[in-house]
Length: 171
Image (cartoon, rainbow, N blue to C red):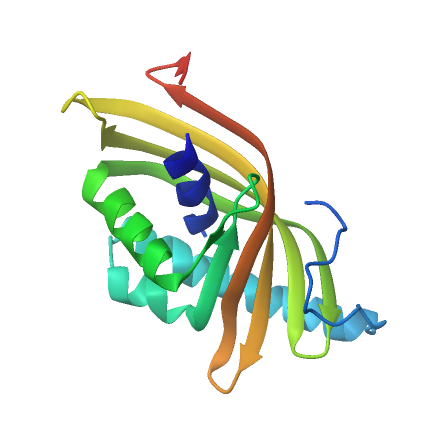
């Protein structure tokens, strides 16, 4: 289950503010709309990279200090997330569909906090060595940091509403 939580953070929320991040400052509607468009482009880049199983392109969209905080409060650093991403990609036989929907967005300076709903539908090898139909849903907060070359994913937390079906059965 813990691996599932970490993988949910890969693909690609409460209002609680993680320690060490500045409080949100009001941002104009125009600025937020522009950032939403920029992040939607990043999510599309991430989607294409996942569909292509392009590990380098996936990780290029993350900061060097990228990390995820799972519901058990465990922090998984970039190295752990790289291993999880490789494991996810290695297990996929083929993608059926993959979507990222920004539910809400809050922008404060060079940080953007997006509550994102993800749905991943794929044929994947499971622990029994067989390929199964695996479908997952998750809602999580993704914090992006503005960099010189565009927005980069910095942190994933507040993971919730997880659901997984394996061959149509809860798994």
